Amino acid sequence: MSYELLDCMAFPDWDTDLFLLLNSLHTDFFDTLMWYASATRTWIPLYLLMLLWMYRKLGWRRFLLMALGLALCVLLADRISSGVFKPLFARLRPTHALGDMVHVVREYRGGRYGFLSSHAANMFAIAVYSLLVMRRTYFTVFMLIFALFVSYTRIYLGVHYPLDIICGGLLGAGIGWGVATLYQLAKKLPPKAIKAKTPIT
Image (cartoon, rainbow, N blue to C red; front, side):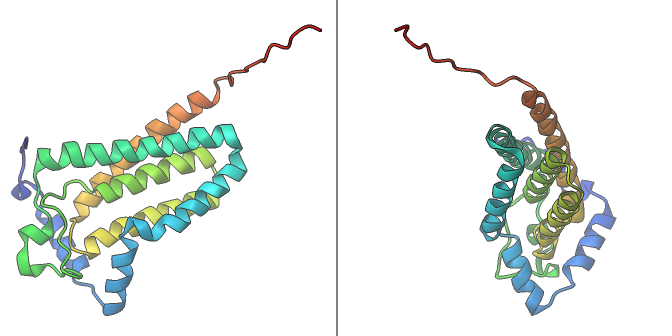
């Protein structure tokens, strides 16, 4: 069921103009790079290394809380972006709205609607949540650059306007901040001590 409020004509012209400019900057090398950088599976080894590093820094109890928070970030960002915003605004992706003006890679055109970007929402939810929990300057810089880079690949591939990315990033950042707040509250709860009763001899 679609709750369409706005179509692509309701969005500003500068968004389309900026998209066409950024999307036109293509080379064969970057076509390949952005294609793989946009795929979630490409980053699985990096995610595993990050989880290992977090485990070593946080210990078991806080790591489990951290992992639960990450899962909640992804769930909320994905469900809200895809389940609420996309059918609500029904903004066609550039690949469906602008035709031959869009440079596509490997004939990839994405789903029908693109506002707002689920990639950006997910990446910034993970980035903001993890940097607030870990609080390491170098990690903060890395996560923000990583989130921006992966989000940009969606413009390069022609499936999102800049405003899709900006709004997706803001949604994700808000979710990341909210879940990080829950993490800080949960961290203060005392662990349940289970004491085994030993028989008197």
